[in-house]
Length: 256
Image 1 (cartoon, rainbow, N blue to C red):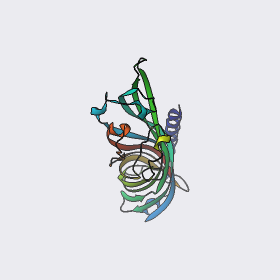
Image 2 (image 1 turned 90 degrees about the vertical axis):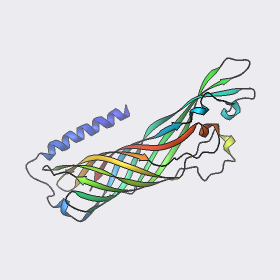
Image 3 (image 1 turned 60 degrees about the vertical axis):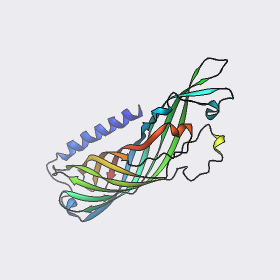
């Protein structure tokens, strides 16, 4: 329901902006010829994972104590699946004009969100039948992002201008448990840790809308993590994953 409301809002915004762009005169005629300008970004994101599972651990039997079970039980791992959730992003925009169609953009941002890993397994005891159990590990992230992007702008149509954007960004996860001790791991049913840094490749597209006093941009962008962010600490929950990559879909508004 939340995603539907966001999509409806953005669709209405695009229609309004497109209608506004067809007015018979141009706003901010000299704006695109300025050497640099600044602004801010507000966005919603959907954080998730791309998992490459280790199939050799599926249907393998592990001590159920690893799952918080009692002595005498065994656990049969069936699958591990990612689950994405919605968060939000704020940032500061810096734009340097390169040519009539190219800009260099630096947008340091702070993104808040969380992702889940869902483990499905079967617990068995000699006295009872098998029970299907699900464990869900919630991984909260506070990402400090430093993207460097190249923006290619199409021809301006009155007060609207389409563009595509791409580049790389370095990301630090301020919520990472990478440097925390595992001595208290027994206080949790299980522990999954993510590395504190990553590098993402990004690709997106959007529209610039020119108003009387400012420019507003509506943008959709995908970001794919290039590094394996999982810390493989030889537990059942990490041994079942060969590689874990981050991915983020973001819808944003910028005001410049």
